[in-house]
Every structure is written in C-alpha cells, then in structure tokens.
Image (cartoon, rainbow, N blue to C red; front, side, top):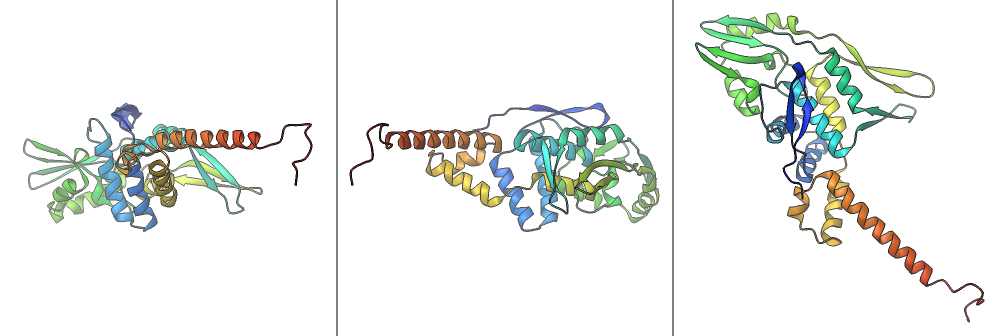
Length: 282
C-alpha cells in the first residue's frame, strides 16, 4: 500500500514542487475516460488530480501541470514513451529528454489589461484542455487590493471567476494573446526504415494534452486483471489494490510470477525419472 511519499518535480521559472505518486484507482479512472473518448472529463480529472498530488500549489499553469503529470508517469509507469511509425518501427522516446526540451525552450511571457477597475494579468494558459482557448490565459484577476491567482484554484473554481469577466475585458485579452506566442521546437523524431518524421511542438494546450493522453494510456483490461490476480492469488482486498501504486503492483505480481515459475520447475524435475533407470513400465 502506498504511503505519503513525495518526490521533487522541476517546473517553470526554476521552481520545484513536491508530488505524490498516483494509485491504481487514479490510473483506472484515467483509462475509463480514455477508452470512452471523453476528452472533456479527462481534462477536468487530470487538472484536479494535480491539486490532489502536489503538496503545495503556488500559481501553476498548464505547462507546470503537464510537467508534474509526465513526471508522475515516469516514476509510476516507466521513463520512456513507446511510439510506432507507419511501417511498424518501434521508437522509444525518453520522457526526461522531452522535459528538458520543453524547459529549455519555454519563455515566460505575460501582459496586463484593465477595464472598469478590474485588472487582469494573462500568461501561459492555466487549465489542461484538449483545445486551445485564449480564455484560459487569465492568470491573475485583481479588483482593488484583492488578488485572485487562478493557478491556485481547481477546475470548477477558476471557471466561476472567468464566467463573470465582462465582455469588454475578454475582447482586450483576445486582442493581445499574440504577445504570448511561444516558438516552435522539434520535440522528438519518429524513425522508420526509410526516413524520419519530426514532431513539432508549439506549447499549445492541445499538444500538451495529446502527449499526456498518450503517456498515460494503458489497458483497462490489464489493470482489472491485475486486481483479480492480487485478490484471488495474493488475498489483497480490492480496496487495498486501489490504494497501491502501479509500480508496487507490478513488483508484487512479478514476485508471484517468479514464485509460480520456480514451483513449476521443481514439479517438472521431481516427475522426471532418474537418469540410467530406463523407461517407465507400460
């Protein structure tokens, strides 16, 4: 069963956060959203999951959330992404390499607009989303001396503030979003026998979501099979299985597999006639 273990994750602006591991319950829920193609609810779930995992949140944006979740994936499910080209050539991409390219090329940009006593600071989008929206670029809302940092709020809480912004302010935000544009970089290459395809990355919300969805994709059937094995063979209650991390589960099942393999080998050896005694009688 997973304890409250935290590990550091590097995010934008040279900051670090401390993050917990995901559990089988988290991963099963993610797979259900993926296998039912419900991108909207998957985005909301992943966004809220960050606030559940991180020990202390300090005005994080969508890129920070991406870096946190991709690190969760690296620590719980492995450090490479396996991609297959059109001719079925397997490519293994290092998650650490992807992180480095993103952090080395990200530029912190922002602008401020004001209307009727409301001051809004915009920067990199805050929410995880499967489409790009200028709406999500709002980082901070200030009314007189009160400052509201949307990066500290959960998905639904931030929506409540955004829905009440006046149209005139939203128009100013939309007209200035060009100031936030990031440069395009080559994130990785997918190679096959004849050539290679470069994956261009422009720091857009839909791109970050696509990589997250790919990296967190597993098999719901396999996860439920692991639950069956843990329950039937190891007598681990389903409630405890859901609290375990995916990494812990694989280690436990590997021990069980190795033990069964050794038992089978011993049985095979004991049933084999001793050498030199000829064939068994018919």
